[in-house]
Image 1 (cartoon, rainbow, N blue to C red):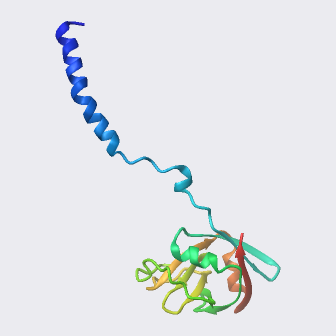
Image 2 (image 1 turned 90 degrees about the horizontal axis):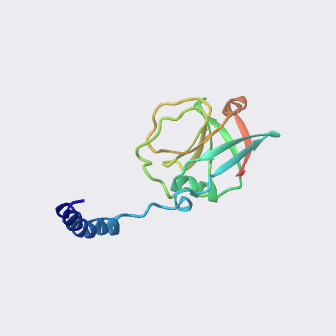
Image 3 (image 1 turned 180 degrees about the vertical axis):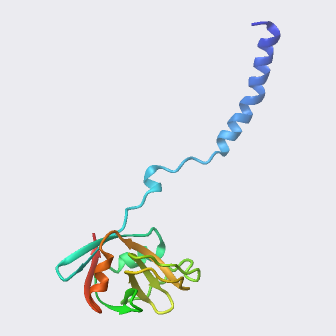
Length: 156
């Protein structure tokens, strides 16, 4: 290496070193794996000696619903599309409730204007005030079997 090149390397290192250190000091550390993940909220919906499982969304409303479990509710048919029941306590942690939802079969939702839980066994039109809480993995069709069902919803 020539003397001029060596001097150039030393000058570059002297100039770039503090710049790199300043950039590293400003860098935001990556969150740890523990900070990135929360426990998955799984629930079990039991009825007539059968049960289905569902996973709740990662949202304040879903966490508030999960905190109310276990619940025994009487689900009643509504509009030949869903089963509904009123919760003992209305959910307050509603985010984007005014945006609404276009429910699909298996969706578990909360209808904020009425304060009721809804589990869909058919798709439905978009509804303002409907907040998705989670989704039944398999077996949502059982909801169509009776006009009223007594269910127990518990933490899985």
